[in-house]
Image (cartoon, rainbow, N blue to C red; front, side):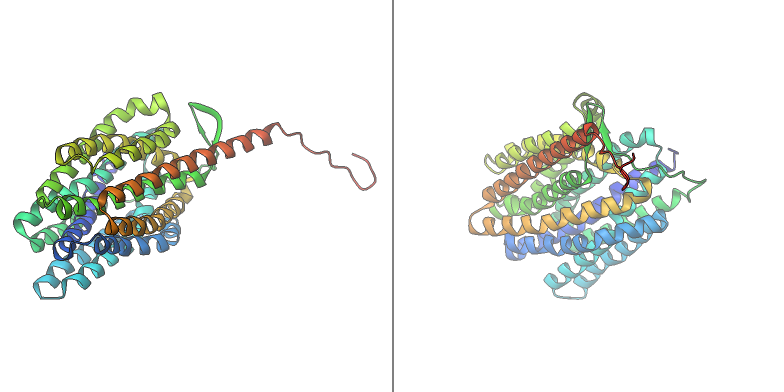
Amino acid sequence: MTSRTRLLLPATFITSLGNNIQLLGAALLLVRAHGSMLDVGWLFIAVAVPQAVLSPYFGRLADRFDRRRLWVVCDVLSAGVALALPVGLALGVPQQPLVYATNFALAVIAAQFTPASAALIRERVAADRLRHFNAHYEIALQSGMLLSAAVGGVALQYFGPQPLFTFNACTFALSALLVAAVGAKRGTVVPIKPLPVLHPTNRGQVLGLGPLVVLFGQGLVVVTVFNALMPVLVVGEWHRGAGVLGVTDALGGVGFLLAATVYRWSGKWLGDLRLAVGGFLVCSGLLVLQPLFGVPALMGLVLLGAFLFGQSRIATRSLLMTSVDESRVGHAFGVANGYGLAATVVVMLIASLVTGRSDTRFGFAVLALIGVLSAILAAVWISTISRRAASNQHEPRPVVRSPGGAL
């Protein structure tokens, strides 16, 4: 891995920060105007649907075209779309349609960004450095997502929406410059034959792509629905300022940074598979507790939850990235991203309806229950695949005779 390849990490952080400043800032505008979880839910659904539909197809594009150029193009287009929101607000365009339209357009671009970024990393990072790089990549991605609430919440409260969304457009432009500075690919990459994923702490256990897609998708569900519930809880129900929301999510970012450090040991000690499944189960329990005890407890639980979730997310990403050949990584992540966002639409609708009829406590509980069921499904699925693989290895091969009876 060259020093230029490391530029992908700050570019990832900045892109994630920009995407989620746009989304969470828009959610806060809707909460202030309407105060409805359903309105916020529809915003997140408008973002999830195009990615769910387009990600598998765009994943194939990431395997056919220059992945670095695709990343740069995504950032440049995102900068232009993000700038359209403050310009539209300044010109007096109706707020709600403008919010939905710009975030929908950004979602279409993000459907290409996710598989292209994953495929570029697999292409540029050596195999023996891949897990280490994935840890830092996932932390950059998720920290940008969580810290976006800190930046967006404080800036929206003190400066208003137009400067915030203008700054957001600049983040995409800076990310494009960083990725462009990585440079073109040098040399020829020798393709690696696809192999079944074997985990060092579970020798003989073969992991299928399907359950890894479920685990990866569950991470998207948790992050997206959590980010939709938080503004409604803190601003809408507890009547606290957007700055409180920002500080809470900033602590979540700190939890992810701690997760990156601890993963170096926990990944080796527990193994990626146990860490992925077990971490999601524990995080689901914490989700139930978060809206019950007020702001101080919420901050502490978000910090702990992000610490555990971050390690699970890194482990899942590493398992998924090594489950296919380098030439098909874009497609694998496109499918996983598409599934995760399709599941997000369903869970978002359920959580929105439950919250609208009650309050966010029940919305968090629904999210937790679905998280537990998904983790259990993935664990049972992996166990079934492993047993079948072991059975096939020990099953005697049938003797094939010729029509005349000779061997």
